Image (cartoon, rainbow, N blue to C red; front, top):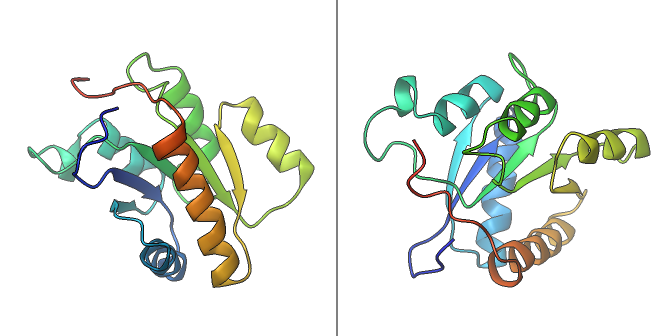
Length: 153
């Protein structure tokens, strides 16, 4: 992944409009310059990643640097989406971060077992959410070395 001056694209799979708004506010308050792209469910996420349907037009689906994924979504849930991505040679390296309200050790263990790269419990307060997203961003976009997904079909 090249780290040039362009804002990295973050694909967010979230079915609740309130949570989308909160996440936009969190990124803004954290001072993170990112191109947030939202999809409502797992089916739309796959359409985005495979550039199908409304995402087929040139430029409609920039390659994300990171995916933030709600695990409990309608139509196709996040767990199934992760299993599909991890089976795909072109997308298996894509960093996928689970965003969840659940602190259940069972849910956390399950998420890691299917290939989630990190599990973030959504904090109750905006300041805590800003701190967590800032830390997550610092690690994934500044500290970690990421593979390039550019040029995939």
